[in-house]
Length: 429
Image (cartoon, rainbow, N blue to C red; front, side, top):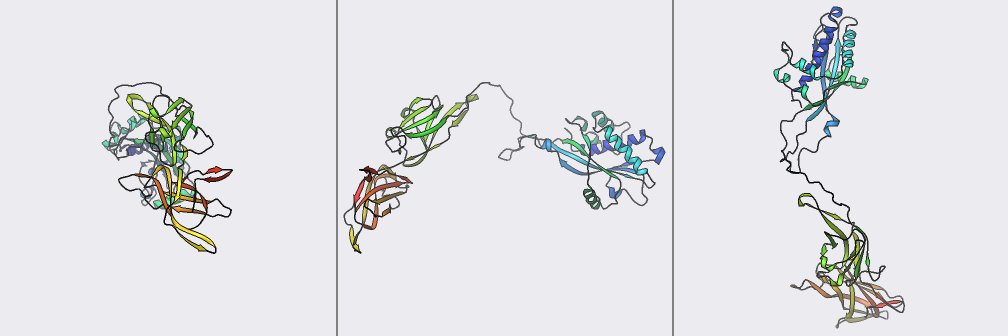
């Protein structure tokens, strides 16, 4: 790659190329001596218009191809891990001057001809221009040693199109009178970074092998004994899918990983989990069921492949609802209303952090329903962490028979039916 001096080296080589062509074509015999300069256009004309060809580097832009070639140069901690080159394209403004008629056109014709015939700065041309004999006193030694001839890509010139509006803005910015102009793009210049990236240790060896990286597929999770029914704490989960068995496979219900000894793997497409037999049963509520398989890669590293989660609602079981002694009654418009406390057994036990609600549904025609909120903490008294019976106060509930359900974290218990109607568990208020 080139050093930072290569930007000046491209200009120096281009200047020598144009000067050489004017000498070879003996342009001096027609228009007189023609210098080739590399200064801004507003500095060219000082008094009488000279006979002169000028090239001016007016813009530098990033090269789109090389800018996207490398990975990011820094890691997440900000440490430099790579040293990509600075890849830029150069844009030159070529201008011809002459006080006599047709002089500018003569200079411009020869200059554009050589740029068309030789669009690439060859390595030999670069070395000849930067290390001329005798040395060019206008080229600093650091520019001669810029390594432009050794960079991986050679610089290529392309004639660019400049609209009248762009040309007007450019010459206005230069604060110079417009002259015959052409623009050329030079691509690509690769400048070597000064700060190096962190070097990696050498590779000691290469292991080649094949690993099955197809994740398991979990299609459905149902109650084995009632595929269309709800899932209760004593249900047997039936998992169906593909690739769900084999070494390194684990089964998860929410954050709970089921021990292999408590899973009945009946094949790669069928697995049963008896919730009532689990050492640590999952709590009531919505759970994401997943099948995961750990794959051992090279050098002992592991990759875990997971199936898509299947959501399962684990419903509580409510039983033995009862009205606590000490309730009070009042009569309004002939209707007796009671105020008191209702207790219900719930399985599995609920923790203090869960949200529990008791739902009352009237069994008679026109009977309203009521939602009773269990107070925060659900009656859990430390050092206990859970409780199997919850209670909730009720106020001004009409006397009568009610079906009782319990809702824990939005998972509702199921009411039983008798004679085609919901009837259990029931309580008389």
